[in-house]
Length: 325
Ligand code: PEP
Ligand code: MG
Image (cartoon, rainbow, N blue to C red; front, side, top):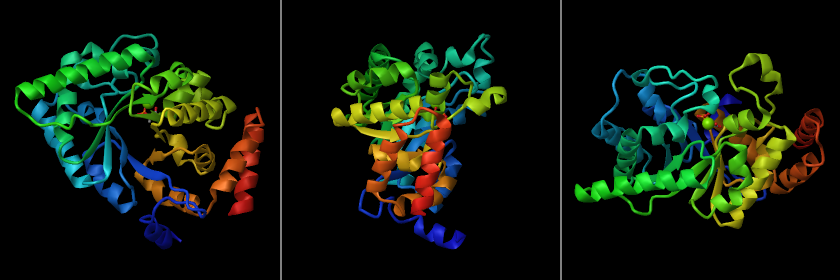
């Protein structure tokens, strides 16, 4: 079984009735690229760039970052790599910055807020991503965007980075796609408006669940309430997919939910363009995609949307899986 699943993982993520979904990998460190290849990832949908910062005592220079990002883009070649700008703060604290004294770190100075506070460092990182953009199929996304202003502010820093590169006579791809992560309920509710400002959405379900249900994703005392198939979560993702598609942009899902065999058929039914998951989960999830039909997934989504109790939703999904597999 293991052998056949590993052989099949290099086939496309395509349903029996010919519907294709991109299956990408989430990566935290450069060294994981080998597992990206071994497990049949068609690209890197989320490169968590902050991990390079976490293990160090000093901040990396622009040259160091450029080297890392260029190598990554080059190794992946035609396959896409989505660089997420620094998602520092909360549970991810770089030694260089020390501990922030915050009563609620998850609601504090993290992700894009942290980058805007450390604007020089942010610009340095964006310059490195831009410099890598000429070496492969590179995209950029901003984490934890809560509204329109933050997109404008982040893009203003991106423009500064572009101006600096021009002044230095360095190349970059002016058409590099720029997207945002959808991880907050506020972002979900105005997704229709935000869709006109960006090239793609990537739904980060780990945080979206945390902030929608009010459940600290790291707190084991309330982990029983951390429910990926909560109807509010399903509605949120569906709303973002529809808003994105209505505006003609791609929507990807890059949280753990996308590697859950119970959730993937529902994402397929919504018409999600890309899922990005931990590399080791790719072979199993591709097998599920290749053994189902879009028709079944759409029916499942419709059935699931009629329930408001998580236990009933779980039951509906289980029934459908037993019928098909
Ligand atoms: C998420 O929040 O779902 C996500 C993919 O980002 P991270 O897990 O790095 O916060
Ligand atoms: Mg997140």
